[in-house]
Amino acid sequence: MQIKKEIRAGKFYEQACYSAGILKKQPPAQRSKRKQMQTEAKRLINFIERKYYLMQLFGVNFKPNRDLFIELSFAKEPTEKEEKRALERFHRRMNTFFKKKGKQYRYILVRETHNRDGQPVRQHYHIVCTGTGQLMQEKIIEFWGMGGVNVQSLRELSDNFEDTCQYLLKEKKPENERSYRCSRNLKRPEEPLRRKIPENQCGQLPDGVELVNRYLGDNGFGRYEIIIGKIVDQKAFDLYWKKAKMDKRRCDEAANWRRYARQKQKVKYCKI
Image (cartoon, rainbow, N blue to C red; front, side, top):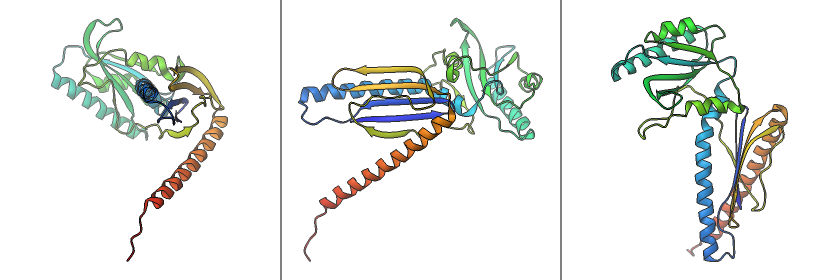
C-alpha cells in the first residue's frame, strides 16, 4: 500500500507517493528494510515540503507584475531596540496606507546579515508584499525613513517563483531564528488530498499540469516518488481536482464503514 498526497497552491502543484505499512508474508529482515525506506521517504518529503512551502505561499498570495519586492537597509548600525521599533513602525504605516486604498497589506519578510556572496554586512530586510496598483517608491521611502529603499515589481523568472524563494532562503539562520516571517492575514494553502493507492502504482501528472521536477527512490522494499508541477490549464486541472476530491470522499466513507464493522464485531454482549 502507498500513501498519495496532493497539494495545490495557485499555479503550484505537488504530488508525493510513498510506501506505508507492512506487506503480508514479509520476513522480519525485509520488514525492517521496508520501515527504513518509509523513514527515508518521509524525511525527504518533509525536506522538500519545507523547501516548497514558501513557493506555495507565493502561489496563493502574490502575482507577478502586480505585487512588490522591497529591500530596506539602515543608514547606520541600529541597536536591537531601534531595529525592532523601525520595523513595527514601517508595518503600521503600510497597514494604514493599504486600508485607505481598500486593500490588505500582506507580506513575507526575510532578515539578512550577509550579502549574495556570503560576506557579513549590516542587517537589512527583503520584503515581498501586495501592491496597490501605483508606484510605491516614494511612499515606502517615507514610511521607512531609516536608510536605503529599493522597490521593484515582483517577477516570476522561473516556475512558481522558485528563483525568488531560493534567493530569500540563501542565508542559513541560527536555530533560534526563523527563515522568514509572515503577516497574520497571509492566505494559507488548502489542505492536501491524501489517499491510499496500490503498491505498484506510479505517480502521474494530472491533466493541465506541466512537469517541473521529479524525485524517485526505490530499494526493492519500498518506494517514494515526488512530482513538482505547474498548472498551465486551469480548467482541465479543476475538473481533475473535483474528481480527486470525490474519490477521496468515497474512500473515506468506505474506510469509516469498515472501521464501524470491525468495532461492531468486537462488541461482547452480556446476558442480563
